Amino acid sequence: MFNIKEIFSKILNKNDDLNKNDDLNKNQYTLPLREDGKKQFPIFSPLKGEILELSKVSDQAFSTGCMGEGIAIIPDEGKLFSPVKGKIVSIFPTQHAFCIQCDDGMELLIHIGIDTVMLEGKGFKSLVNNGDSIEVGTLLSEFDLNLINSSGYETTTLVLITNSSVYSEIIYNKEKNIDVSNSLLTIIE
Image (cartoon, rainbow, N blue to C red):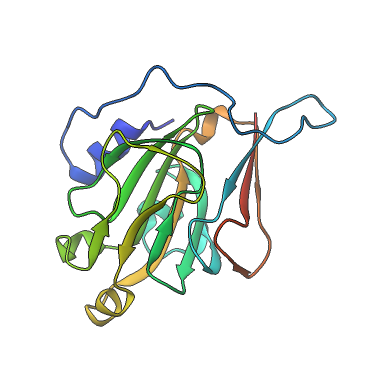
């Protein structure tokens, strides 16, 4: 199991201390209980675009699931919205990746593009700060799809549950395309 601190340490290849919020309200955004009594937590789409199975992502750090289970989206537009209610735990210095601690305890990493760290922040504009509380649909970032593509990088954006091993099941949206705020994943306790 990876936590947000470990994920960023792996990305940065150093051990930065990341702020964690220990006072989160649990289970603020849940679906009705399943017939088996388990809780369900929705993750909404942060982008409009084409859904891609994680195993089909070109970067093995993501496609193998070692950074957490999840899904990828090839975005149609350069706007990233919050898929959950929670708190921004960390924003990568180049503004292409966000760690979110959800109010229900889930830990998410949203990573815009493949190898886009090489752009050193060019084309990315974070609209939130570390420690900000966010709601589903909060605009987190704007990014320049044309700049990313013309620089030779993929815009494939990853939505990863970094503590996925604590959940019994993840249900994936089977559609080919998705719109912002449509259900992307359902996490089962």
